[in-house]
Every structure is written in structure tokens, then in C-alpha cells.
Image 1 (cartoon, rainbow, N blue to C red):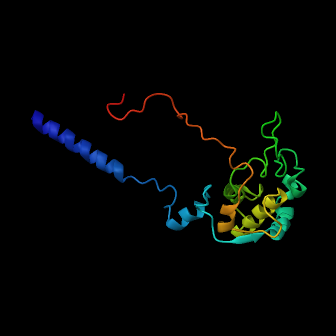
Image 2: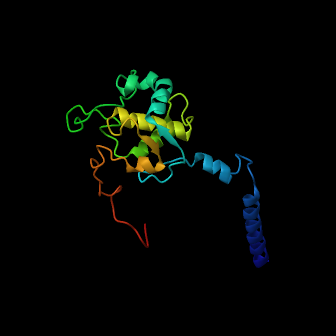
Length: 187
């Protein structure tokens, strides 16, 4: 009798576990490959993730005037309160009042594309086309004296741009956490 009771309890336990796994909350929708692609927009420093497209300084100047100048100021120099200056600051990073701009601080042109693409304009992030982003980046690089006015930016050309502060970042070899790495019998 005791063995039968134990068997029934074990069977009920297994059955309840199986039933619990079948419950559906019907929350959300499946993450289809198309939906995932829509959010897979990051661009790495090595240029991986840069989309097809191209833009010129001249096109970027027009887009900047329409989409960026209200916050970042004319030619990136006189921003509205609370917004970043985008031009200048060369030679200030080691001073008591560093001015971090596209031209003085950013180590990779590709990450400027990434940031503008994902976060700008402030009122409508991720609303610019790839061509518009390449154009704005070309313009920002031009007003920071990094590329000539006739520059045409695309995935290949953007990766070739040598930023003034490319060597200004030093990798921090310290561990993110303290303690020993546990490989076995961890407590």
C-alpha cells in the first residue's frame, strides 16, 4: 500500500510538472528573423554592421541644418543648453576642462555612424536613412577638419578614416570583478 501511495504521488508530481510546462501566457509575439533584423543595427569599431549606402559633405550639411542644428548649433559649435558641442576641443582632453567632441574625443568614425544612426535626431531616433547618416557623418568629419569637403563616405571609406584620438584610449586590463574564477566545485 505504501509503495502504491508513493507511486501515485510520484505520478501526480510528474503529471503536474508536465501540465505546468504546457501553460501559455500569450504575451508578446514571436521574434521573427525580419523583426530581429530590424533591431540588429549596431556598428562596431572595425566597421562590422555598416550598411550599404553613401553620402557627401554637401548633402550632410543640408541634413545637419534641418535635423541637427537646433540642438547642436550652427556647424556643431554653439549647442542649445543640455546638448553637446560637436566641433572643436582639439588639445583639450588633458586639460582641467576637456572638450569632448567628434574631432577631439571619438576614436573611430564608424562608431559615430553607429551613434547617429541609433540615437539621432533626438526627437526621432533611428529615423534617418543610411545615406543620410553617411552624409551627416561626412559633414561632421569635415567641420572637424578630418576629411576634405569633397569626401564621399560609405562603408569602405568610413573605415579608412583615422580619427585624431584613435590612439587616445588605453585598454584597462583590470578584471571587471574581484575574486578567483571558479571552474569546478564552486560555492
